[in-house]
Image (tube, rainbow, N blue to C red; front, side, top):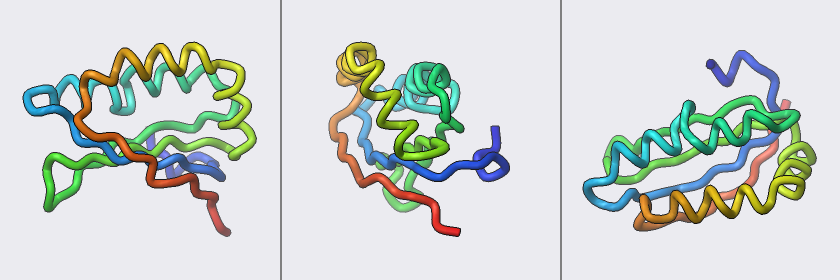
Length: 108
């Protein structure tokens, strides 16, 4: 799925460092076909997920979760909080570091 060809107004950006030796499992879980993207796909207003790797630091990844709006994202998180926590706990063992970069809105 090409994100830029679909309408989006909000993106959640997270930075991760997978645990050594678990890079492929991390990519499988956090990529555009992974457990997170499949979970979000049930949400009204979800557009798609991108997984990006830093060219200078090959152990640093960014996820970008695109939504129609911040309100759609928040409504989904609230309605599915327990499932979100379950998946988060399931994937926690894959990462050495996890950091929210921020929530961004599209301008223009």
